[in-house]
Image (cartoon, rainbow, N blue to C red; front, top):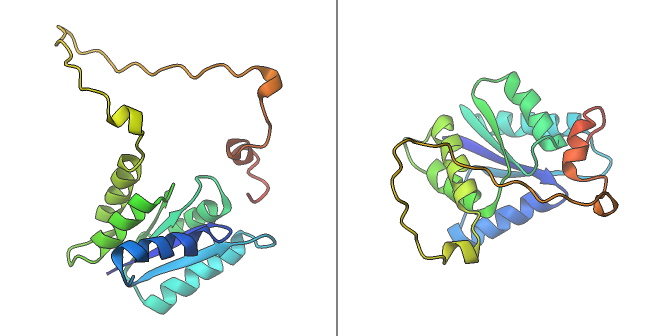
Length: 176
């Protein structure tokens, strides 16, 4: 059986598990890890180590809130030392529901749950307006062309705000 750890900044992890339990009922072998002010990466690694030791699980999947944040960075360090552990960033409710449901199957593996997490996490992000647009048939072209990536709108300098989470990733020397 694959152990699932949900780690996030603040009280997000317990809240996500409470939401998942509203939908799925009792959650087995799923553990929240909080990252609170004053804690550091070593506290997270200590908690990951404790959970893995207590469960005796052969494989562990750590779902975290933010790529490059402390829960992710600590999880990556921990996974680097254990080939049977992986970390997926961007946990959301659809991802969590699919992973927990998949983990309950006899043939569930770490690899299959990582794939399920990625697919469900992305597929679970929907726009009402985009989902309700009529499907337009595209005329087949002679040559296959790569998909065009729309350009992001230019934000005037006076409207730009420093301190977003991606700014924090570039400051790798301090815990996020």
